[in-house]
Length: 301
Length: 303
Image 1: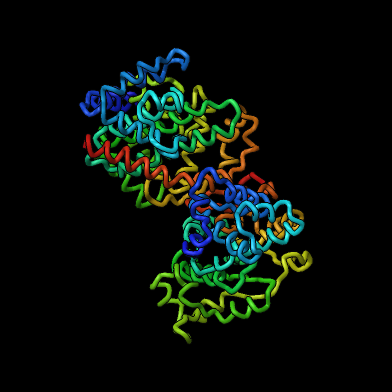
Image 2 (image 1 turned 120 degrees about the horizontal axis):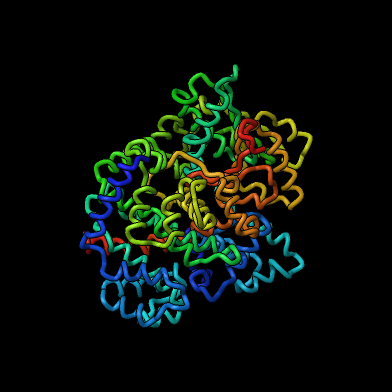
């Protein structure tokens, strides 16, 4: 999490707290329009923080001047991408969104198990698309393992984890994390699914790793993405923000066809599909938002 | 529901009405709220509020909350009326009165969760109706505030039976109305309706109280009932529920209530529901503050 210190240095606290200076809300609205990421008022300091780092880098002195950089300057589009980078940097950690994980374990898994109960092969396949350094797929695999003696007893399950960046995938495969990445991971989970590693870090146990298949995949590569079939749940957090409208639409279309009927799709916790696909149903879970590909029997296709 | 059960609920509700903790100004205020806006006399409201200094003070504090649009509390009820308009001040007063109306001692339901949900739903109903051309925002607020009135009846008139329902709902992580139906044979919608009849609330509010969980049984004011149904669901999905995890999901756009509301508001499909949800999260802190300052104080005074 960003500290409040740098916000203070930039003088953005006053701007955020000052309802007559709407520049950060303007930037918030612009970011939402372009990327689907929405910063609630309580987290506007994160936006101010990110803007501050960019302003310092560019030598821009005021938030209003920076607004011009994002809207009328010749380099506005690259600058917006840089700002998006700043907003999502360091967000990754294990067990990042508990409401999403509660939705997975308390609502979705029971529903999928019920739907598939008559199938001869009892199998679940989750996909972490844009898995970065592996925090998300490891979290998903641990959650599935937690259900392995209960709801998922007798089921096969796997997590496919893909990313564009080879280096990220290597880090993900190693599965070694420090305190920052583990800040939301309970002692119970640490003891059960991790072993000590160098530099006071923790390494994911093999029983978790063997559930995950890591591979390099460019989500823009239609021919490869087409092969990701039979998926029950897709997690694609803070990845689509880097795609322009048509590319984003295509990837979402792929996710829709990659998913089994009755499957679910999750974006980042502050991210919206922005109406780019009207075949997905917007679903509210307690504290989380997801998208649903209607099941055949629901009659809602 | 059988006639004898209906009579049983009515009898117990009548006993609640005579409870001495209801602020003197609540029932006259409800009467004023029924009158057409153009016939409301501002002086009458100011005089009414003058009878109860606690409520007057709370009303001013509430009017100064970001939830109601003023940056700082107004100096008098008259000033609040000038700044916010008669109808909004009426709804603020109603909110404050209700917070003090009932002793929450020994409630089976967490009173602060109840008030948080009621005020949250009121705010969300108003915010949502702001997105719909021609919708009556203050009416939506009142409907949201009062929709679960039946829980108060159940807390006060059926504490043992309702206690069992609350326990079952928490344990099984199901909706309270489902648990009520299973353990008591009726829900807060039935008992709320009995109170609405006793208090002679407007029929549209009575419809909301009675049918917000079963909109296909609505007899009139379909749009308002549908709006409250959707906002109630949304609140329960965004940390404004009853303080426990509900193992459930909501497909709001494909909920029958969405279709009903759409018939009255063609612009409904233009609402960005995801952004609205995120914006709702913004109001959580202010709602909690309002509940703490108004209802907790009110409960302490009357409890």
